[in-house]
Image (tube, rainbow, N blue to C red):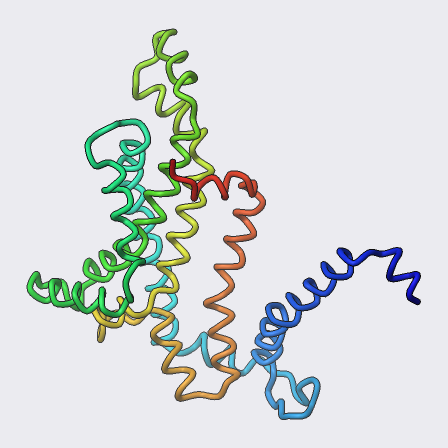
Amino acid sequence: MSWYFRAIGFRKIFEFLLLVAFVVFFVGPLLNLAVLAFSSKWNYPDLLPRQWSLQWWYFVLQEDDIAKSIGLSFLIAALVTVLSIVICIPAAYAFARIRFPLSRFFLFSFLLTHAFPKMGLYVSIAVLFYKLGLMNTLLGVVLVHMINVLMFMTWIPTAAFRNVHTAQEESARDVGATPFRVFRSITLPMAMPGILVASIFTFLNSLDEAQGTFLVGIPDFKTMPIVMYSIIADFPSSAGAVFSIILTAPTIILLLAAQRLVSADIMASGFQVK
């Protein structure tokens, strides 16, 4: 047996152990969540549920508040993504192409939303929104979500635009293309993978946002993460597992789509700001 391990090599064995640890600590809880969502009676120390059922799926999907929270979460996430693209993409292009005083300072200032505890930041925002009449409004919730995703929608597109060589843009202008035509036909398509990654991160971040929505949107705007707290507290764990799958599924689907559409090198370069 010892010769077999020597033939494989220490590195291969170590990589296999890391894979096993990943499966146990990451995939294991997800599998437990999936089994729990379809179980009707599952008690320790049973390896699998004694009864399988879809009753908690029917319960979650038939509840009016839960159905409304799902639709509201996707609506807010879509609005935040679209508005962030409209506002932040021109700013990212300016950071990448225009040299102006304190440009690096302004770019790094977008990190401030992630440099402090979120609850303290949201309380300060809530005080300001109360004075402006934005509490318990859709606009207030969208603005809170946008503040939380500014870093993604500026840093990643800025790096994507910087990776587009200016020589390509200059060549197009030399043959008579207008600046807008150059941006639309050359710069934007080449930077699109980075913009796509930033948009996916923005959508998922907005979909999972709970604290800011709770402070600004309660009681009329209850998104999935907020409703999930009450489900976990007031209903059996199977109902919470069902709602967790509904909340997690978009994340897994979008990340898999991003993996198919965008290479790892492009995703990594999105976080490199020179």
